[in-house]
Each structure stands twice: as C-alpha cells, then as structure tokens.
Amino acid sequence: MPQQLILALDAILHLFWILLLVRVITSWFPIPMHNKTVRDIMEVIWSITNVVIKPIRKIVPPLQTGGGYLDLSPILAFILVRVLRNVLMMMLF
Image (tube, helix red, strand yellow):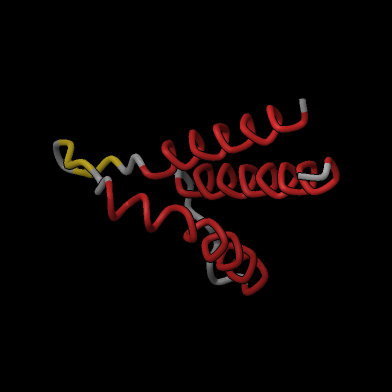
C-alpha cells in the first residue's frame, strides 16, 4: 500500500478517535440541545461514530449495573481504532 494512502487512513482513524472522545465526554454532561448549532454538531458526531458503536453494541450489549447500564462499546471502539492504527503503522515499515 502506498505510504500516502496509509498516512491518510491513519489521519482518518485519528479524526474518528477524536470524534469518539468528544462523544464520550459530552455524554457525561448535559448538552444544550435547544441550540441548533450544538444539536447539528452532535448529530454529525453521533452519526459518524455510530458506524462503529452500533455493531459493537449488538455484539456486546450494555451491562446492567445496579440502577443503570455500563456501555462498553466506546471502550471497545477506542481499542479497535488503536489496533487498526498500529497495523497501519506496521505496514509503513
């Protein structure tokens, strides 16, 4: 695979990692969804990250913990992105 393609794929995976991080952090706090700009940005982030999160969630459903649920899919998505980036970097050498 050409070096430029590998670096481009790595950049895309890095951007996805950042969007995933934003999704996780914003899920911990109330978001002003009445603001159209914020709502539009969050919808874009969720639609992009759902491409990976939803299939993982089907395989590993959220765990019931006391009065709530623990969703492991974002953690597994972070691991998946890290593994893919490592594979790409190994292809460079």
